Amino acid sequence: MKFIDLFRLIFGNLGRRKARVALTAIGVVIGTSAVVILVSLAIGLQKSATDSLYGIGDLTQIDVMPTYGGGFGGGGGPFMMGGVSVDSSQLDQPVLLTNSALEQLREIPGVKVVIPRDYLNAGVVIRYQRLEGGMNIIGIATDDLSNLGLEASQGVTALSRGTIVIGSMIPNNFYDPRQRPGQEPPPPPDLMDQQISMVVFKYDQNGNETKKTISLRVAGVLNETGGEPDYSVYLPLALTKSLNEWANGTRINYNKDGYSQVIVKVEDANQALDIADQITAMGFQAITPQSYLQGINSFFVVLQVIFGGVGAIALLVAAIGIANTMAMSILERTREIGLMKAVGATNRDVLSIFLGEAAGIGFIGGLGGIVIGWLAAQGMNVLAIVFLANQASQQGGPPPSVAVYTPIWLPIFALIFSTLIGMLSGLYPALRAATMIPVNALKYE
Image (cartoon, rainbow, N blue to C red; front, side, top):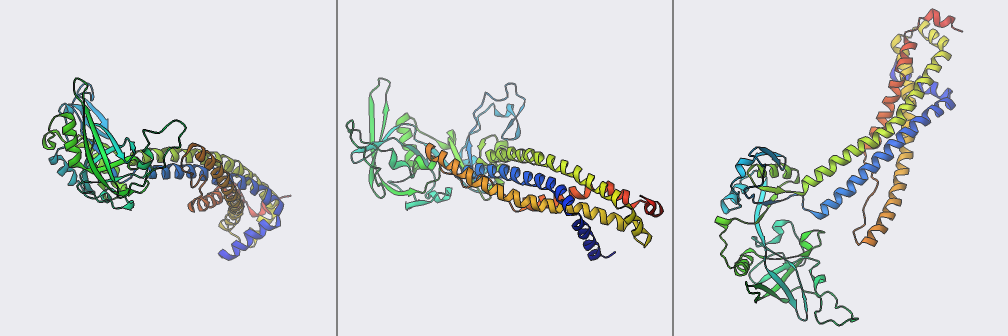
């Protein structure tokens, strides 16, 4: 039998029993729409969570810290660090981020750049005209912050002697120390290309305060990132080093003492976890946002499977309905089956017809379920975004971009799955029809 003839015969048979086919297909519609809605919800939650993480951290960045001896493993046995098994006996001695260690990091395949940085470990106040404020001061060993993937909304990202680059939220940290009660607070100042004074202070053993004032020019203001750069002031590492030496009263030798932190930028975000594992195997501590992203994705994959399984239960009930409908159809059409075999239809032809009818019911139900599921998912997405946007505005956070998301592969998968469920449900009735003896079928009343 030709495929086109088989196709016409199948849908012709389904068309003769419209009410029964429609009632049977409703179960498939419910199951398919449940799968589409629930999996879309899980994917939307995953997308919203990962989009938030992209705003918090650079996925191509690895923060590397030295490892100091003691306190690991407890007994010299192996333990897990960053997903790598490390022998704690190897960590009895500190593993420092010296300049030679930095060269080893640069030799790792996939590493784009290795940049040391350090915090200003002293009391500090930044003053501009009548205003002052406290900031997070970071010294960075690069002449341009664009090497860290940062961009400027004003000015430049280049660092030079006597200049600083500030985060987008730094102007909001300024206040008027002479402000009177009830007086309107001053607006955030425009610091671009302005001279500011950085007052660094320390105390001796007797509690006496010593101050050092440095005049610096704001060379650039960074774009908002939603992370640490927004609240940080960046200046050359050499200046931070000299101020830390002044505050602590000791000289800093990076070849001997190492850096407190190093930023490793990788070429591809997909390599971040593997490179972080290699760095951990070298004895350092490596932290990357990719590890958090991996944990989030693993959680939501499990959630998708659970939600999809709930919808699949409805499809299982629908499969029982399809099997029942096909079994009843065979009883009603026994003489028709005998007649088909008498005029030359083979077992394969009869099997194909009844399997095709069962698959057709699954296809029709799956198509209806996809349409209903997609429309319901879009409605849920609009309502959820409105609700979450109101919550975000009250809490001061950014509004979500999506709450329920239906990727293109999901409707295709749902349609194929529902059709396959229909075919499998009709397999036993179709085998019964195909193996009927023509004489017995023609005598059936």
